[in-house]
Image (cartoon, rainbow, N blue to C red; front, side):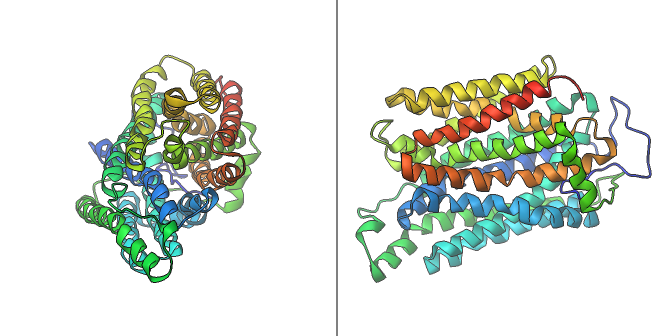
Length: 429
C-alpha cells in the first residue's frame, strides 16, 4: 500500500549518499513549494466557509463540521487508489490530474449555489478535496527526496512554510469576499421560496471566489503540463495492501501515524470554529467578517513557526522540539478556555504557532529508517490525515452540548498524546 509514492526503486539497492538526490530535476523544489501553497490555501478556506454555511442553512456545530468531514474523508477514500494512479502516470502528470480535479470541484459550487442544497456543497467539497489529495500525494514525498536525507526534517518543514503562506493569505481574502455580506436578515428569519432565494443570493460570494480559483488552477495545470517530462530518474515500488499495513505493527511508526491523525484533527477542529469562538460575547464579540480575518493570525503563526523551526530542527532533537511545542499548545488552550476577552481570543489564535512544526516532524520521525518501505509509510500517514474529518465532528458535537470553550478539552488531549510521541521518538530510530 502506498499513498505517497516513492522515487526509489526496488531494483536499486544502493541508498542515496548524504548530500545527493535520487531525482535529477534542477529547480523542481520551486514547483513543489507552489503546490504546497495552493493546497494549503484551498484547505484553509474551509474555515471561512463554515460560519457562512452555518448561517445560511441554520446548522448546528456538528452539522457545520460536515464540511470538514467531507473534505478530509477524501484522504481515506481516495488516498490508496490515488497513489496507485500517480505511480502509473508519474509525479508531474499526477500533479496535473490533481489540479484539474480541484478545478472541477471549484466549478461544482455553481450548481451548489443554484440548488441552495447543503448536500450539494458537501459533494463539491469532496471533489475539491480529491484533487488536493492527489496534489499532496505528489508533494510530500517529492520534497523529501530533493536533497540529502540528513536535512529531510528541515527541508519538509521549510516546504510546509509555503503551505502556511497559503493558509495565511487565503482566509484573509476569503473573509473579505465571502463574509462581507450586506444582508439585513438571516436565514433563521426566512422560510420557503424566500429562504431558497436568500441562500442562492448569499452563496454567490462563495461561487465567485471559487470561480477565480478554478481559473488560476487551470493556468497552473497548463504550466505543469508543459514541464511534464522534466522529472528524470522517477521509479516506484509496487507493494500490496497487507505489506503496507504491516508497518503499523512497528511501535514507532504506528504511534506516529496515530499522531498524524490526532494532529490534523486538532488543528482543523480549532480552525473550523475559531470564527464562532471569537464572535462570542465573552471573547472578542466581533462581527463575522472581522473574526474571519483573524484566522490569518492562526495560520500565520504556523507560517512563522515553520521558518523558525526549519532552522531549529538542524540543531535540536526533533522529538524534544515536538514535545515542547505540544506542551505550549496545551498551555495556550488551557488559558483560553478558562479566561475571557482578548486573552481568551488571542491565546487560542497563538496555538497556530505551536502547530508549526508538528506535521513534518511527526511525518519524518515516524518514517525514519523505513528504507524501501518509505512509500508504504508515507501512504498510511496520508490516510491518517482523515483525522481532519473525525476530530472536528466530535468537537462540533461536544460544542453543541457543552460549549466551544469546554470542548477545547478534545484538541488538548490530542496534543498531550502527541507530546508523548515526541518523548518516545526523541532518539534516532
